[in-house]
Image 1 (cartoon, rainbow, N blue to C red):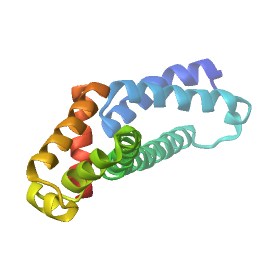
Image 2: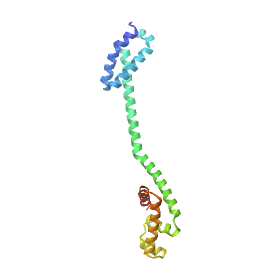
Image 3: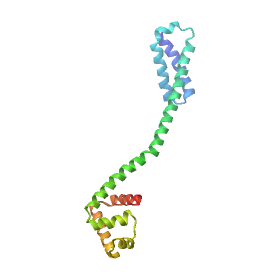
Image 4: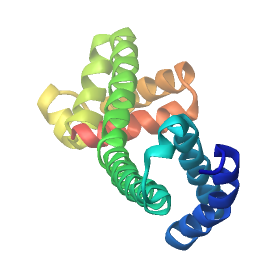
Length: 176
């Protein structure tokens, strides 16, 4: 039998061609070829006992193709499942975190308001009552409702930037 170096030289191009034909990607074919050559090198002491070296080498190569395709399919399914998970679950989780964060900011700022302003703000913006409904419920004038609401909004705007204000507006709309 030829030395292991000769066997590797003889089979290197043939194995590469086999992989290229089946995988269609030169870089992958090169990697798989190297894997098979390494396996042959590791088993070099037993190669002399093999009756049909050609069949042995290409059985290893065929098994490598099958393993590679199985792994590629599994990886693709995993990637697709991960992308699906991120698209469907993560935005909701992130939205919930942002929502809770801004809701805590809003709650803290509302607690700083005088009690009547807070009450009018909550009735107007959170419960969605009109100025007339609030005035009737609290037995105050419509103009007083507008003034308290104006002062509450003015205070909130001074405490937070416009981006935060628009997000809090979204929160208020979502809770209504």
